[in-house]
Image (tube, rainbow, N blue to C red; front, side, top):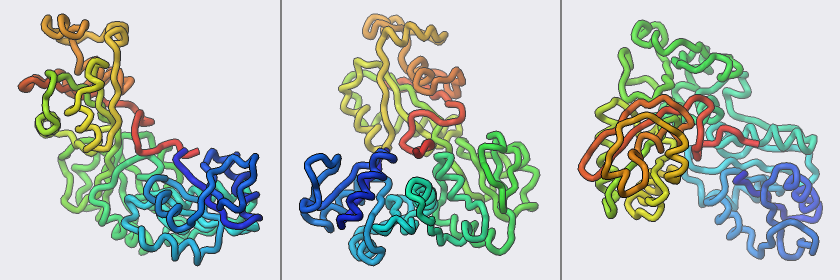
Length: 359
């Protein structure tokens, strides 16, 4: 778990070490408090430590006064889409306060989890939660979905608070959405036939466009597309990116839904391919020729690729291996010195930076 606990007092130290053991979070303590047997990282400056952790960790538990936390973190706040979840816990372990990124960051969930561990009372102040409603951005966080455009979330939440039902169109089983307070979960096929029945609609899809999709609809993008890539040595990141965009556009797929890239292991030092993964902020997985052959995936092969790589195909089998699925959405697309295929993973999504299992 990419989380950290920071404590600054003797009582806070004991609590931090205990919670750290139970959560797997890294513990940070001032030099003066650290004892030889403590499983913790020492620090000398609180402001500098929080600045570093704020930019590198997804979840922060700060065992200190709320005022100190606010003053220290204020200069680093950017967006609820990027800021980590921050929970403040008093040194007595009485209250776990969801302070920052309650929905998309998961601070509300973290506060409840810390409360379970410590016996504290979780303090949640987000309006939809207080009203017992299931906000769209909570669904997005829990299912690992990306919201487009994110700035419309507040309109949807405000509508729910006014008593308006938000319709969520999806092919996922209804039970994965959990509590349905304030929501109507409907089949994706109904989207084109219910254009006026629900003024607020959220659509779970990896398609760029759908029949009946309105310009005000909220898109919930699943990280379920795995892109297999084959390329000649030295192909630039610019050309690879352009090829991916072309293929996704041609096949009506959203690049936001790319979960990871995949290729054969002889390409693991391919600069352009590595750069594309970094630019798109997705992992890249490499498979050996032995793994590809063992998968026994039927697809179009190339004698040239067989001679160079030891296998007759790269993009199709690596896409399907990465997705752990036989659902090939895009078969081998041949572009100049580049081949691309796209496979779709089943729910729950695989190999994504968007966490779907939080503890």
